[in-house]
Image (cartoon, rainbow, N blue to C red):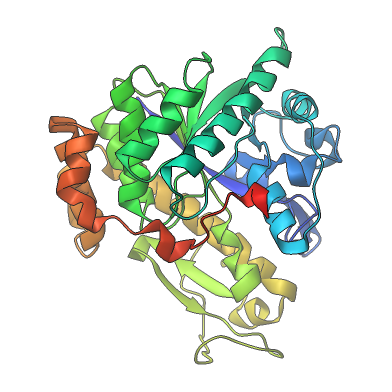
Length: 375
């Protein structure tokens, strides 16, 4: 049976979502995001200053910690500030070995839809980083180290895979953009499964009802070939950032809860009671949800809501027709299920030819044609 785990991404006490962090106090009680979910993803970029994350942030021993190498954040920081972020692959690897169950190798993530020459350059640079990780990897560490695949079409996937394959690592991560496109995300996973024995897969930055269902559908279709699928997301933090209250069991429904004082998005609303019985909503009023600083309550509700949604999909995946009925209003997801079945029957190349018009153009979402490392 395939284990599928949602991995809430956290920034510890750094970055955009500083108000939520990995641990916070709520009405006199400490709440730990990682302990609630049983897992978390932390980028080296945010965690590099901490020697023992479990001890320093009270993370339980049985919590799965995935350590991202920080490539995206390093590139983004350079893009935003113009300043170089100095890093050393050996230091990143040692940080992962000290703190994480799973580590992702350093990569140079392409943005937009770069030409073939640029794509080869990015994959070559990534290969060099992987070589450094492999050279210095501890023979006694229990860390599982994952390779990474990028590409939004079969040609680019071939280029990247041929360059970085062959290191005998413990699993693969997939990172194509846009992360919200179910066709692009399923294509990368199906490509790896078509290539051979891939028991552990992590999908980067995937969230929401537009993509999550395809992971459960693939898990059922390949239950004899996959042991573990994980996927990370920080979208639950939209409560803190945008004051968005999510109800994903209704296939993506959400509304905005305004602050008592301050800017709100959309039409102001007032409810007599909250439409959820999660541990947060069961213990606070609508007024408290409006007043609480920086949307912490909203973000915690969104986390519980996402976990509940994933649990529902995990149950329904065993009966694909019931799953499809549940998703009957999600036409794009249902079309993607068709695409997955077609790829299984034929192959990824043929699937792309037949369903290419349904793929989201990566340039629409991320128009840059430069690597994030080149700014």
